[in-house]
Image (cartoon, rainbow, N blue to C red):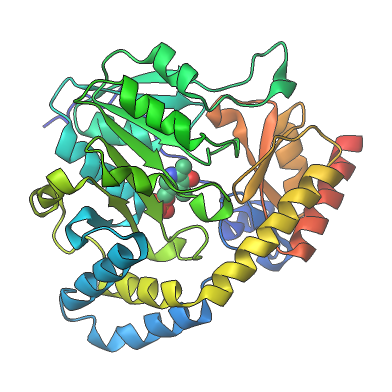
Length: 362
Ligand SMILES: *Cc1c(COP(=O)(O)O)cnc(C)c1O
């Protein structure tokens, strides 16, 4: 038998892990610091780690009550109804549910380029076509920064069914002004859904787009526990959707969309304000340090990483890796001159800057 035609489908390429890199180079994993996947350098909240251990004894049960408890907690946090919270296996899982609920075969979506690969992957799984809007700075004046503006989106918009806005944006760290999000929603068709991906929302001091859900039925917001909460490994995220079609969740979700372990961890993480605060404060420090101390032009960031223009990104990333610092070569994003450096602890950030500056001086 043959699979369906997957030739248009692209692979998701995650940042490389420490174990993988250490094994390749025949070195000890302890020598490396990984600043390539925008993870929390402090790990999960200790309370979340305890909750995961405590959940172990009950994992023979399907997660019904705990799913409801986490949903209620998230609904309360955002001032929405429980039906508007679509829990999922990571933010990526929530993107799939939105695609399942909106796309008919042949419908198109509009995604940013450079941008997060999974939007397009998810649309293709659901037999959608993928169009792009360009947010890159002009090649002749790269210092100008990335353009996360309604103008860029609307000038490419051609009636697509779903438009994805990443704010703050990966990999640049730039963000949309809330008025621009609103303008995109206003000026696109009634039947176009605007998905605002706020995976890095906690690191930005701008207001969330969740407020728009109060009086619109064409905006959904994506959030995740993978970044500020340090729970990337348990896979937990959610979409907040308009009240009008919230019921569709029951018809599109994979049963028990988030595991019991993930839900328990999520509840505990949401209660640990100290861990979130410490993480955000450290990111703010690290972001500024990277921007001031790196001997390369950097872009303003509202997320937990900084994009730096280093010349030959693949050579720089490889040389830094040999010195024990793993950063993200952004060639696969279509930015062969840039590396993305995740904000680490103070110690990790200082080491990353030392190593990158040494590499850049060569
Ligand atoms: C990390 C990330 C997500 C969500 O990742 P999950 O681990 O699946 O929750 C979504 N969008 C962007 C832009 C991201 O960087």
